[in-house]
Length: 278
Length: 236
Image (cartoon, chains in turn cyan, orange):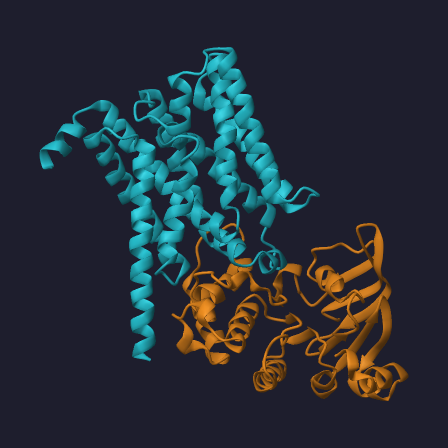
């Protein structure tokens, strides 16, 4: 087992995948807590589909994938947030609209240029080989920026997640911070989606938050726990993917599912002993 | 100088005027209750007092060094907090946010203020408890502590006793009364509980798109409006 690990780290593409994966899973775990609690989980899913469309177009016009996709997905994120806030089309329907449209456009573009081939498969389900050295640098810089911003605005993010009305009343610029969360989410999703796949990236946002909420009772502990769970699950997932040659994205999701089940069971046992203790 | 003075304000909501030609003032140490039927513009007025909705006409003046973001606000109960993982301490601490500005972290002074207010409301021992596991009355105390952390001068309570049982409701009124008397913090409360209003409040503002009545609680009891509303308690 240990030898396998050393062998795994001797491949530059594996090191790149793990580096980017750790950073992205950290960011998505932190943001995920707010998104899940604010009932915005589906935004992550919608954005990943927009990201798919953007990457397809980027490939068709030979643009650099990340620099092309990030602004588009940020735009979509801000738009989605506005729509869920005030509109005749309700949030969930709007997300479904936008995400399927983006998916369809992406598929059209791909079929007109390269044809439906392994590229599409890789976009959908992710590929561990997707990251070039340039991408890795950019991913690390951007995710570091996401982390720093998150920590700097942690107190405000807590306030607007817990109670928007009170936050507004005490002069917190709620719209600004909601937009900040959306933008950070957009960046995180684009960074992670080529490795995790457009269909699976939103799991990185939802799973760790839900998992740690099974047993943690304070916001801070939920945040820290999510971050730790997310990174550990990612690492195990990628190792599984390396050892058994399974797709990286799917492996990570399966490990996350395992963690959720484990935490749910611990939560049930804890509650029961708590009740009987009373 | 009053804390807040409203002069002939009209507030419109999506093109429709909800409140018109309303004048009243909130002085230091006042305990003002805003009463009125559903849809009489109470919630809209609360938004305007918080500075979230500018009046379409007239002026809302803040005096005595009160700033719009320094009003201790206790929002209406919603069930959004049902599954929210947060400790009591974290919730109360978030009340200090308005004193932070763009500085990201809380100071020792913020934390001692939080402890002090939790002590005052008798929830110090709940500090580490999870907010979602508390009873309705305890939750309201926690949110009141948060509101106290946000203000030195004025509490704005939007239907704070909705859903509380009678005993807890009485305790809550006592608590507000005590804070108003001892800390010298003015209280503005939107309420449906008319009996308690006339018992505790110093002033009453009866809202029906405009001020049907504004004056002391004693005068209100003697007034025509007050008598009708108090007598016909059917819609409480």
